[in-house]
Image (cartoon, rainbow, N blue to C red; front, side, top):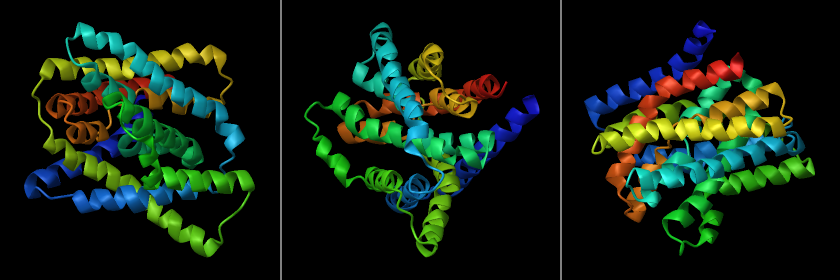
Length: 291
């Protein structure tokens, strides 16, 4: 089991490490790369998987509801802790809710559960992203217009994929193959970009970062474990939910906090130390999921 977990975790953190080292040596501007990933490669991945024959929405309905409950439940559990830590809830709660499903989660889930995990892994990623760009932005500013979601390429790709899934439409092979190839670019690129991006954050608030690194995975796993008696998920989907619940804060939290001027320095500490802390909690979640 230990060797299995090492074989799953090491490739993910190795690519992140390569990105960190290369970024340290070259200090690149990845703005264009990140834009390509968020507007082309990731939407292509989402659409290709959700429009594929293997994606049957009815088979993943309960997983979608459970993933939603994990995100919202994590927020409810962490909200009172923000007061105990004497930190603004708008600073602390979103990173505890919205985890690194894209950069880290999808690669981990594929390595842990194999190619058959594609639909479920993409589904929990889409759930997390949709909640982040709706509920997450509303938490930061109640005046946020949620119609902006209609301009989000990932949300539009998910909607189009759902239409194909529900109607039974299929793409011609000549279109499906290039979409799949574009989507496959996103996985290693997200990991590499995560390694570079972590160089941009610092340790301004070490105590808060350590607290977040513990609260984020434990809150998510507590919600998932509390839901288990009420779920009839297949073993693979249950394992995917558990690993999803233990993921660290998404780097996107830092970018959004910067945009909304919501103490981005403190959010950066939560993101950086949370991702370092995942070296402890991800193996634990994998051990519980695969044991």
